[in-house]
Image 1 (cartoon, one colour):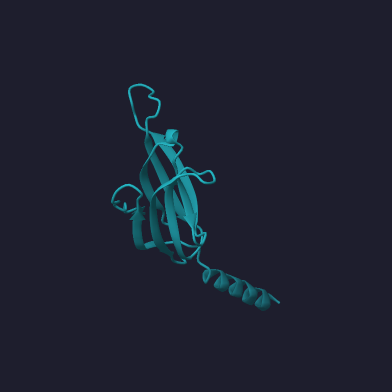
Image 2 (cartoon, helix red, strand yellow):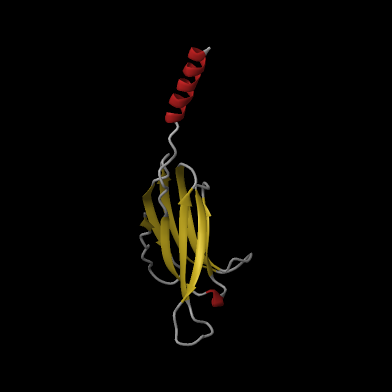
Length: 138
């Protein structure tokens, strides 16, 4: 009986060793100019939901409170599963029929250890040529 228990314990230990937990997931961070007083904000869409999305607005530092002052949006993507997805960041008025501004499009691959690789990036603008910002991946 002891041999059976020891054998079962050994099997349980060995099978647990094969299921390593993913390393700390990498995050993808963007810092983009924003001014919500205009009604515009950054909207994030994914072709396959691989990331949790967090957007934090930080107003510009001024000596006094100024109506209409802008700031930045810190956008953080944290992977939740492996795969490949296209992430679109669009500066738009979010209501139906709302005006759209710049759009940034990135393709990311996430491996089984939740490590992120940027595969492609491009941007479009309604006003002028746009430089596609490179996100920070860490």
